[in-house]
View 1 (cartoon, rainbow, N blue to C red):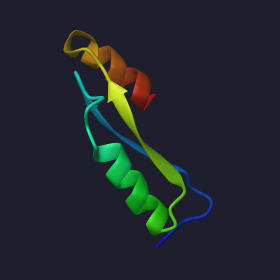
View 2: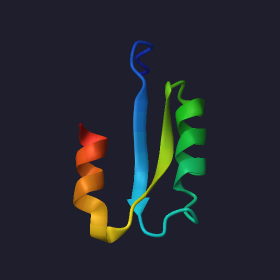
View 3: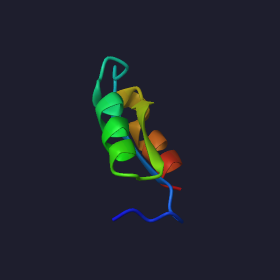
Length: 58
């Protein structure tokens, strides 16, 4: 069930990650389901993962 008052954001995190087809597939699915949101690349060097996770969560 779509919630028009919510914008969903999800992503695939890794290093490297730009080769992933996940955003293409998930964005297509979200559009087909009428969900407002996006699925993005979250490219992050493993050395800085803890810092990145803190940034994305907060």
